[in-house]
Length: 200
Image (cartoon, helix red, strand yellow):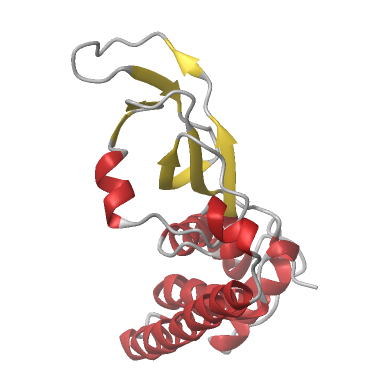
């Protein structure tokens, strides 16, 4: 089962560096992992709509300070890394993707922690800041370890070639993880009921 330390140790092993037991260790490896892990995780989560990192929430309405431009204002969830779609009704399935027609008919604007739109009620599907590594898919863990290795390469090795090699493997493993995630969506879609299809 993945942990922050195990992911950091995968990244360090990818670079031929010693493993760590805690991020608080007084070592260069631990300091570098502590500096780069969270940022690297969030960037990878934000870049693709991973199934395991999707969340749907009913938005809490705020006082609208943009009347005339938007009908409603809502509080953006504090753990929202990236908006996937906004709809008037809750979708019962994660793989109900936003179509271009829906995107155009349900426009929104984000300013700071406020989301403006013309829907009420409003349900937001978004990528959330998932911090529990036990919820990551195995291929995501592999991709994250290589992306972290890219960040650690220069501080720990000072070798641009090591960093370039790590970047190539990070890109390759991320692509494999995204493909597996997309294939899981298609497989589940083949078995969905008529009721679910009607709700998408």
